[in-house]
Image (cartoon, rainbow, N blue to C red; front, side, top):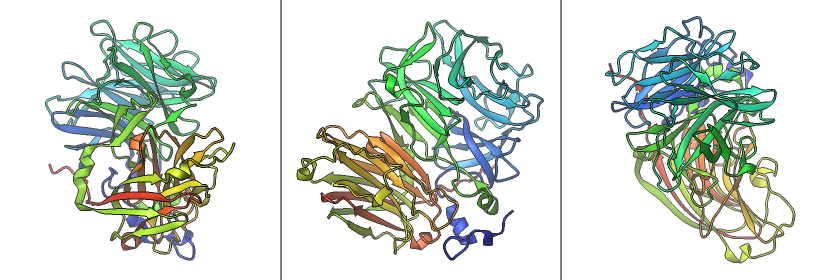
Length: 550
């Protein structure tokens, strides 16, 4: 364990006060130690269940992964339960790795997971007592492992079984498992009727050359008409299918919307240029190993994900914990684009809003930055809308210049129509600040293209923390205003652009902008336009995450 004096943010050091501030108030995290992937989320007898990769003994990853377990009535106020599964069998001695749940029509729950030894194998577990709402005890099937790597696949490159979806025949189920063949990422398909014996089907559900190892494969339907969820076995005419893959080599979650053939068990993207690894990501910041599940309680599809630390590992050891789970998001098809999913914080998070919002309306002139007066701005729910001057939008474009959030200089890079947005995680002097902003670029063709970005380059005076600029282009369609929803919870900032078309999750580690010193600002750093800004900001209460009161 390193001493705090090893870390010198500016002229100071990491103090216990700084490190204590980093713990969140309404994002799920265990009381201590390391956490990563969400596993097998499900709803059962009035409770939402979250299982997760957990190292009980340290704030770093080790080959002893255990399944942590928590329950909640609303996916916000979580209660910690005893561990669900330990690495205690020959087929999972080096870790009970990631897995997925399938709830059968008769209510049975099948949990498939990867066991890590000197080979990655797939195993079955199920509740010891389905009548127990808390699902406290799990039985590992005596015939494990149920699937081993097929010939030609690396023994340690075969993991993370998906939830199952029903076939055309009664009692027929399919699952997918990620792997790689050479440098081609692949998703195998297996058929089963009892979740104990499996048949490997020919070919792949899908594959993309050059994308490397596929892990945490997710596959599920999304309705084209209604803004409601659909269970994993819906194959109607009003259904598209989402394929999501976590790309191990680059550490990002990609998704694409496409068409599934239930006879051939093949999936093809509707937009080939947006195929896995080449198109859309769930999140353009710090977000990985996401897992979606169908919430039959409220008829919606929910997305969970692991939010890693982006500070030095020795600092995690110093504070004794590492990683968060993102706020659960609802998923809908974006009917305006047809190519995007809309992600949005579940409505339950709004129950933490404290009192009436602070409402601000301003006309920001070029180069202007103005404070919004909020006491202790560390726990916030922000909704913001921006309008660019119409005459400026009709002016000349920037020629062939192509803006890119990550390489175009951040919020200090000025253009005619941007950047403009909000600053969070700031101190009064702006020595530390995290701008979340739009940059509108008008090309030589006269068309305006918007980008949604988060600039971490000045988020902390500490050394060793990530200071990148995250983001991507975001479609702004018809008469939409530029809009953002931002959840601030101490060291995590989740930003949703244009109703969730483009999303950015960031970790910040300020040394000055903490507790009562944290501030929020509005800014317009464009050179050629004024910007009308309308903002609502709620302060957020704690979710009071704690042990279950047995």
